[in-house]
Length: 351
Ligand SMILES: [Zn+2]
Ligand SMILES: [Zn+2]
Image (cartoon, rainbow, N blue to C red; front, side, top):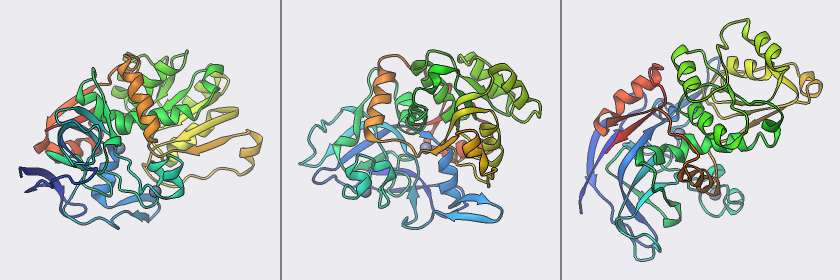
């Protein structure tokens, strides 16, 4: 068997380091994919920390059920290198994006096609070894999606940041037909959200981010207007310009972002939250009814939605977001830059 090189999590809160093991020969329906590109996602930082910040001193521990060394990375595009004898359609050499949100297959969520919400999941890079490596083992060929004519550096991130943004935008339902959507937070998911919103909605969305460079990148990518939510005058300015908004996606998920997102809603408005930054959010309970407000959370997306967003991109309807490629050996440096807020768009590791 060939050797497999990985940038592994060997201890929580510590830098990744290289480990080398033998690749596992796929058996039954399994498929071994040689990784070409793997995107670096904000949630990789939380996995490396071993917890999510819940606000105050509270933390959600996410170290359970994972043995170290462990391989992060869930935005994978690669080439089928080997397949078990029962892996139908897994032709060696086929180039595929890997749907990473793999469930147990037997629970209520999985049976409804929502493997991303499975409570006994095997999500790649979260509960099973992921793509910061030369190879990844995928349990079934149905998670492998053709991505031609896209580049692997675009196809990989579509499986998390693209899918998350797509699923969130869909949950706004018909509201974006009645006024512009607002996208809060222009990291990798937010920028992908902007590109997808340009494909799905007739009016270009407005955006908000505290970082001037990110606002500039968003305007260059077609945002109608870009606001700085840290400016205390911004809420009033948004209300004056729009009369209040019906459709908001919060790609940050912090106290401040949720205060801003709910603060600019019109009656009947909805905020879809995908961000996981952390902190506590409180709101006057009566405002739910007074504003006929909806706040809904979403976590990545289903396999069916992954196909939909990939089809949209393959049809040329989603403009690629700014992407920086770095070699796999720079995985830790890429995580450090992401943590420090130095990344515009997406970073993709080249394997
Ligand atoms: Zn992700
Ligand atoms: Zn399940």
